[in-house]
Amino acid sequence: MHNKTIRIWAWLHKWSSLVCTVFMLLLCITGLPLIFHHEIGHLLGTEVEAPPMPADTPRISLDKVLQIARAQHPDRVVQFVSQPEDSEDLWFVTMTPTPAPTDDFRSVAVDARTGAVLAQPRFDEGFMWVMFKLHVDLFAGLAGKLFLGLMGLLLLVAVVSGVVLYAPFMRKLDFGTVRRDRRPRLKWLDLHNLLGIVTLVWLFVVGATGMINTWADLMIKYWQYDKLSVLLAPYQGQATVPVGERASVQRSLDVALRAAPDMRLSFVAFPGTAFSSPHHTTFFLRGNQPLTSRLLQPVLVDARTAEVTASPHLPWYLTGLLVSQPLHFGDYGGMPMKILWALLDIASIIVLGSGLYLWLRKGQNSGQHLPKTPQAEQPAEGIA
Amino acid sequence: MKKPSHRSTTAIWGWPLLIGLSSGVGLVSGLFSDGGAGDVLAGICLAVPVAVGTWFGWLRRSSTTGSR
Image (cartoon, each protein chain N blue to C red):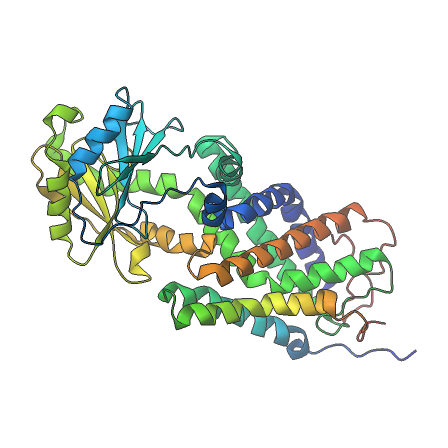
């Protein structure tokens, strides 16, 4: 590679990293506890679990569940209802002031067998909530998400340019060489290169899927505009179906499940909410295979008549979004994978930190560490 | 002091390529498995970058071969 080419890539690596490093450090650090959010929830006692009962214990109607939840918060509306991934004994009812998206929500956990209110977990406070918000949108809503997405894109640029620069750096070194007996800067340069290259694929995948996740809101909005507007044409001009005029939600659920055999309920979005239409109760069903359990099949059920209006296939970009999520969360391979995710995250923190250190210490002993081109044994300036 | 020769492309990229492939297989295989062989394979494959990084970065204290 020519000196000039190296300099261009070095410039790209320096500036893309410099701009995103602080935010990437924040994401790596806040992401660490989020990997273990289930386990931390258990430890803190905030994880709600239904008491064990015989498997054939009859379940109460979903309408009854909603009634119980509404009695807890008569001033609020139901936005979503969901069941935990691993249990059908529990309903989570999400209640907000209006059907519009908001951070002001209350969650009521209702026992699916007895109708007992098991807990009203607050997901919008405490340590994990702060970690979550810092990680997802910096408490700045969609703008925060898109900003972090842009930082993610810069990370990808930094990763790619870092890989390009790896070869000229390693031309005279064996793989894994860490020169400890020299200046600290040289040691940290070698560690930066070593950990950068071993975490390469993981960091690229986690960075790219994280970036894709920041577009989720926009993708859903686009899908609604693109596909649902056709389905909703017959309802044009009608207001959101009032609660009093809605058909039984249990009956609607049964109808939806019949329309998609071999699928299970993931969550229900009520009329007027971001994941439904003003005229439908939308049931999001998921498959029962490892991969299909990540994919969602929406079934739109007319909120007044409890008849299925449509069950449109998800477009490729939403399928991509759903498949990208586990690759970002690392929640699909049990505890060993979570531990490896955490270790790779820590390695990435060291790569980011050492990169920052190398830039801050730039100018001291300059030249020593820089790669030499085969054409001319001259140092390429301006790296790190 | 003897001038060291330049490493070939294979010498530079051999290890990184293996580690990258292993990471890729690990990331994907877990997606198709729920507590089965795919998860075990994912664990083994994703342990490779962690193990290599730990070994060369911290455990192999003495050797500085290849530097000059």
